[in-house]
Image (cartoon, rainbow, N blue to C red):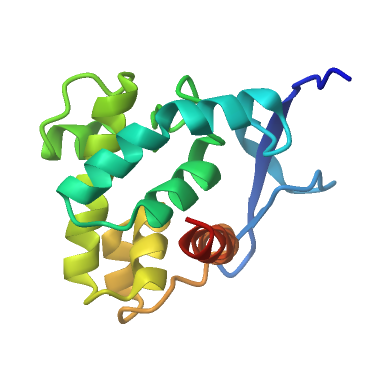
Length: 183
């Protein structure tokens, strides 16, 4: 039996209502919603996803150990960010496995965001910083990785009430908990 691998596209649609509240969804909506982001990732059932996860696992484990961050957390974030696609790119400028933005890469001394090892190192250093900043509250760490540390601070060190961020935190924490107990 052969297993075929197909990329999965996770589109993001947005709409700002009359009160200024931003609504986000990954479902096609009629009306005022517009396509914000079209991403390509791989399904966890695909051979490409599984192959890439195996391919990068040693690097993730080594870098996580160096920076004293749980590898299960790094895996969970990579799963949510890129589906282990090292060529993933968002229309906002985030690239690679951990979807590093240019400013984050610069902040952590990463010269080549496309290099998987550098990308993982930069993302892990940022996560280490967020863990310290938010006193080991992993839900806030994950929310800050998605929405930005200032958004979390602006909402009184709580998960910002953004639909995308709320879903992201749930998704990452589910994968983190699975990975934590399956290693």
